[in-house]
Length: 111
Length: 116
Image (cartoon, rainbow over all chains, first blue to last red; front, side, top):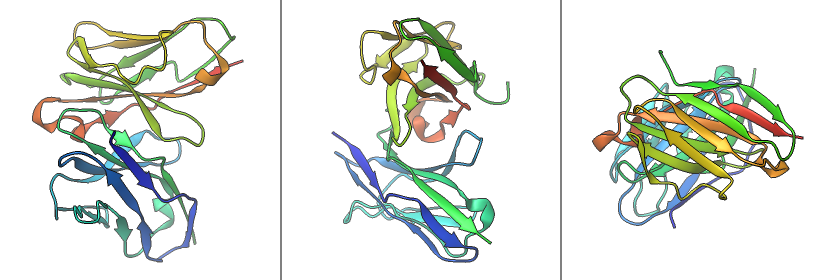
């Protein structure tokens, strides 16, 4: 069945460092890909998405490119802030079907 | 309301008791999802509603788990004869459904269930 694999955390960075969180997927067909974020004490929020190959999703300085050839959707940010500390979830879905999530990666950014 | 509302926010129950968890989706959202988040685990899909029907209930872990949705709005997840392994955060999400599907899913804050 479909699945999502994320790098294990925590990822610990200093403020203004470059961030990469790896995500790869296994799926039939051409799913849509997502990154969700869960800030401390808050619910899950959609961060960005891409619906077809080579699409780039972006939001709040974060980017991820849908790479069909490597079945990847890595999350990147050029300069992280303390306020980016959260748990990040990679996910996929087929149209109206359920979201299938990875296990999440905790990011800790220190000043 | 402005967002997806779940109640209670915390629930402690004794092993063997039944519990009901409630989800109020965003008004007008036709699709509703239940997920479970266990410590150290990802988000596990439980069940999906489109309107009042559940086309996908493949994630319900056992027949102790059931869910219903009435009036195309409020949903209740019921766990009978709770076990310690049921302890988790139960998340509800809703979306417009249709072609946008789960892409625009909005999540509630969750219900933290602890079975003692």
